[in-house]
Image 1 (cartoon, rainbow, N blue to C red):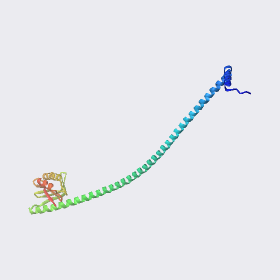
Image 2: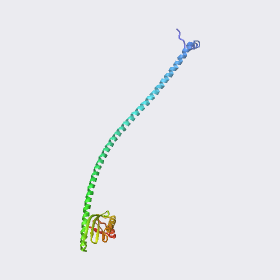
Image 3: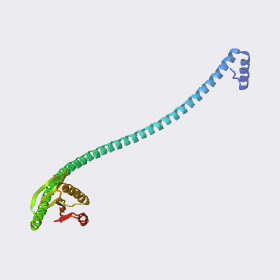
Image 4: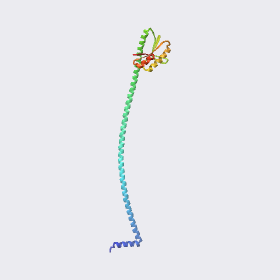
Length: 232
């Protein structure tokens, strides 16, 4: 059987396309199918490329997520460590505060005892100074022939407290006892002397300020007001 050449084969193919409609449709279908196959191939290649790109991005995001997760875990560990340290600090503060409260209670108790001792010492000092001055007055009264009619410790005249009140035949002594007197004590003593003068009209009233630590300024101020200062 003789083999057709390319030119002859091409001519016969073209004649068939012209004459045979069925053949022509078959060839058109084949051509269209090839184009479709080519397009599908291109789509598949493009899809593969896109999928690979998407896969790479997912891998990158996965790595970033892992890194973020590790960082979060590290932060969480630090927060837990800080939380433990904070709890330890709180416990330490509680212990210190309990110790402070204990010391404060002890100081209040000590202050209460000191106040009681100061009151006792003050009362004792007042009694001693009052006794010293009373002995002095008795000596002076005896020297001028005046008799002591009445004396009273912690006397009360018209609502005012007087540390020592000595009432003689012609003289009344209003005595204020202060360990460390101030200017205001002089004014208070003078006010008490006026009350006593109204109770004992006709007698000479002598205001007296006595104590151990009478400052020079207070002493000079008292003497300028007619107050007798007796410091021991």
